[in-house]
Each structure stands twice: as C-alpha cells, then as structure tokens.
Length: 280
Image (cartoon, rainbow, N blue to C red; front, side, top):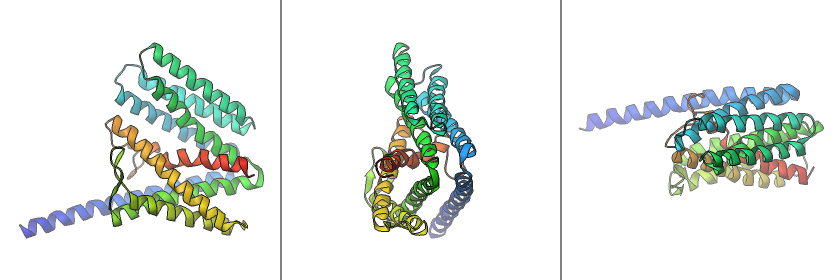
C-alpha cells in the first residue's frame, strides 16, 4: 500500500512538473513576442494586437455558445467582438480613440438589440464586445503616445506578467482560504497577496530602469493593478464555469487559450490607460 501511494505521488509530481515546464516555456515565447512587437511599435504592434484580439473574440464566441446552445450564436458573438476590436485598434492608430469608444459602444448596443430580437443573451453579447475590444484599443493608444508610449506598454506588461506568475506560485506554495470559490475554485488569498507583491516589485523595477522620479508611487500603482489583474482572472473564470469548460481553447500549451493568458491584461489595461489619461 505504501509503495503504491509513493508511486502515485511520484506520478502526480511528474505531471505537475511537466505542466510547469510547459507553462514556463509558453510564457517565455509569449513574452519575447510581446516585447519585440512593443519595441517596434507602429502598425506591426497594432496588427499583432488586432490578431490576438480576433483569436480572443473567437474564444469568446465559443464560451457564449457553450453557455447558450443556440444555432448561429457562436459566429455572431465572435463577429461583433472581433469587428469592434479591429475598429478600436485602427481608431487608436489614427489618433481617433474617442471615435473608437463610439464604435465599440454602438456595436455593443446593436449586438444586444439583435440578440434580444432572436432570443439570444443580450448582456453576454454586449459585454463581449466591450470586454474583447476595449483593452486592445487602449493598449495601442498608449503605445502611440510619443516617447513615453513604450514605457506605458512595458509597465502594464511587466505588472500583469509578474502578478500572474507570483500569484501562481504563491497559491501553490501557501494554499489557504479560497478567494472566491463560487467563481474560481483554485484562486486563494495567498495568490492575491502574491500577485500584488509581484506586481508592485515589477512596477518599481520598470520605473527605476526608466529613470522615473516616482518609484514608490509606481510600486503602489503596480500593487493596485495586480489586484485588478486578479479580478480579471476571476471574472474570466466565472464565465468559464458558467460555460462548463476549463479552458477557452488549447492554443497555448500549459495555459489554454488567448483569453486564459490575457484575462488579467483585459482588466488592467483600461484601468492603467485611464490613469495615463489623467496623469500624462
């Protein structure tokens, strides 16, 4: 009996180790691609952001279709979210981000009205448009804000990546009380604390390397954004549970889909962009 238990424990440890290696390898590739595109900027960065947004829109359509099994709903949910995301990115590149907000809002309203007329879930359709389109538009908008644009993008990237990474390891290491078991069975308060600490340190590091005079303030902002990123993670987990699925797709080894990898960024980017607009 003891030998069987030991063998089982070894198999579990090996499986966890394999999953961790996959996650780290995938994360490394994504980080390199994201950093390279951010450094180049311009239309290359915008095209990459738009392409990822279209993948996220496709995954969102799949989630909605799993939750509400209605013919045609998958395509419509993905289409309206994807179109809104592309229009938002183009508007940001053309310096017309306010028109981007208008386009996203109108598409969300039209999607909800059309869905209501067909008996589809209007709130899921409208929210999907905003959820998928807003962050890509604002990410491109920040990158295009002159010499500081690269710092803005690197800041939010570093904060969200650090929050996700430290939350993962803190949650596995310390465990403890669940953060929101109804929304996500795996998220813990230890993970949230780790996310805030990791995000704060990453923000401070970016501010220091960039030569900014307010490293302490950046660390406080980073901690807040780390919590916001975790809220985005919880939010997406809630939708996945409602759709009775674990991952939005199997696109990224060890992570799942684009939405599984970017859920924190989807929430943190609009909050940080609002801060940038108020404190240019």
